[in-house]
Image: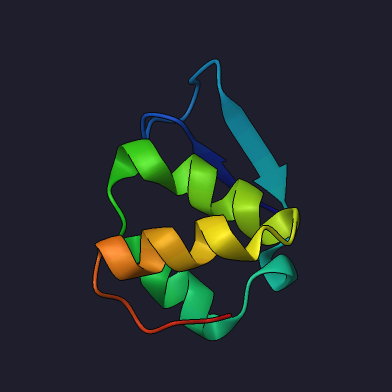
Length: 67
């Protein structure tokens, strides 16, 4: 299991648990470069297959595109 929270802290009220395998290796790399406050949005978009949000966040951080 893995988790991501809205503020980057364990114990945050807004946290999402998911399987490690739900993200590709490239998405895990991108996640480490995304700001703490946007990681929850990024993972939620991946899990929800929200390609536009994924693309916007990856472009905002100049990351390798995954969609």
